[in-house]
Length: 490
Image 1: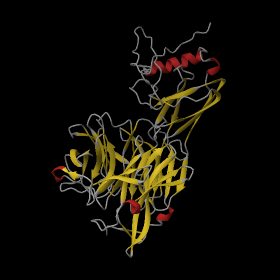
Image 2: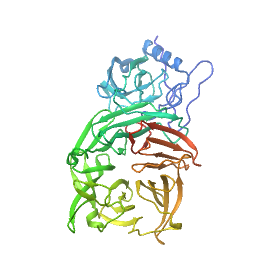
Image 3: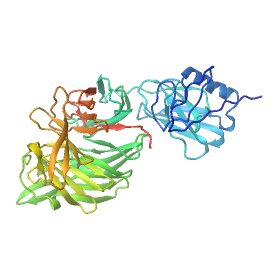
Image 4: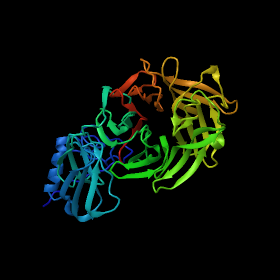
């Protein structure tokens, strides 16, 4: 008589089921796709990796899988991404399955469950380090093992890829399991888009023959977008790139697009783009926000020439664009989907503008000579990068201060029209970057920052104490940095 081994599911929201005495193991429903979990199993599924591997083999040998038993299992490493593995398999009967995988036979991660029952199956393993042995097994969506343990191997990273080094362990629990960033050699106009784990391993990448100053994840996960710039060659050939972690790339031509973009939804991006006009006999480069769809469709959101007065400022002669004076030098954008509003950082004029998306008008200007707000204690900012909304105000990266760059929050009183700096952060050894920079703050008060030309990513706790550091090679500029919960759609 065949002996069957059943998975004992538990609710996702509950705690992981503990190991049961007398050698038995209790299973739990696996976590969401790609969720890293404690060593020794996925989502508390198994507390003993060798025992789980034995159960997998025993279950298949005992015939418990039946028509859902995985057969003809094969894998291949993606030809363009050395850390991505594609797996195929078949079953006699139609079923919905997924892959449990990791760098040990305790696994630790899951691919998404298939959306429909089928007999021909495929899945992509994401989040793995390069040049590493990988274990994986087919499981049902309830955690039932449907194959024995399989092994694969990721390939080595390409020799020219820009990388980062973990200088001090990341101890901030909010930072991870993955970090998304970009490294750019500005002189050579080459870049590397990177996803790293909290040990500093590159688990996904893309090499780009362009300058990339910002990379943003799609709202539902599974991919990123960025602007590929060619300012030293021909910026009229710039493009918006929408890339899925599984390797699909959509390229949308957008001449004079630059610096930053933000997702409006999974298929549309708000992108900064230069605009040109002759003002009082002077060729002036302004900026506008354009909504760009993955299908190539474009829609104007906002134009500086329509909403601001062209005037000389501290950055007026900072640089030229296509022979025109770079008037405001927009360099960072944020989007609030609940209000449909945007924040746009204007580096040359030391301003952050809040834009009403539906009308394309300015709600207010913070900073600079046209500020609608008075700064408490004269604690102003600028020039700056990376504006963000937070409840009650604006967060930004202030590039130029008397003691180095800093991350800062300004609480806004929109009745009294005052702006008060209520938080700021500098590393214990101050860093100064004249370009780029980014800041994100978590609910517990801790923060994650990047420092542009100083090639650093720095995490701190709520008291400003060091909580992890990554660095790139000098000369490689670090762009924006974002925490990713998974590389799979969520």
